[in-house]
Image 1 (cartoon, rainbow, N blue to C red):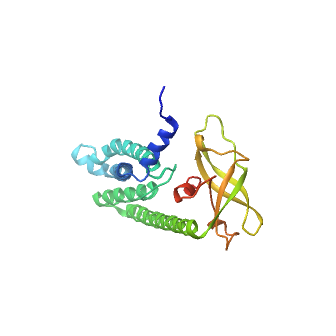
Image 2: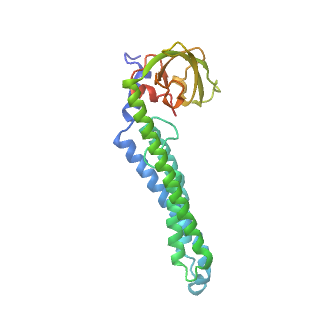
Image 3: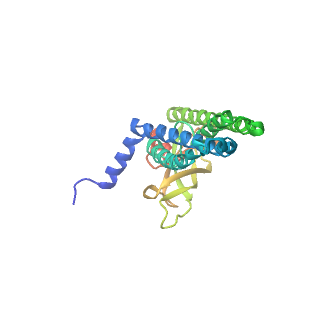
Length: 253
């Protein structure tokens, strides 16, 4: 028996990890492991094109053994990055720095350039590192645009907390989850009445751990722009009584 609420204590620990240097370090380590693992895997694939050179030495290309190291690095890197990102952001599948997919292709491109430069007669193999490099740049640009959009959303939220309005709404629909599920990533529908007396419905996609999952009929706080109540991009949902930016980001994916 304890005099400390274990649920509240767990929530405090999780909140303390959000944005922590330790969690960010884990994110960076995971990304490095993904990049190195991907580079070793691609370099190993080019090793099979070196078998003609192998005949002269009777030794297999050393690059092939990179496959043995590269795959475990990739798997562990993704696991480390996913866990650390969740601790850093408080959200599942949310990348705080750069997405692991783009870093994966950066590593693949590096390994491809490494491999093609090691070939005595690369021929059409030059197309592989060029194509992977283009894909890596495209994914990095998409990630940069997504991060800029998230920053813009945070700026809108900060503005609304000062100049917007909070009304009490009610959840009219939220998906039910399987008993074995740890939480929900889905869409919630909330009804509220704006300052002009107009009844409105808004749908938002969010994610909730099981312990925080609201139910149909529960009250909710609705933050919106009274000058643009039809603009759903300027509407934020949160548990009843919410007043801060942290409150209004809890239910948004």
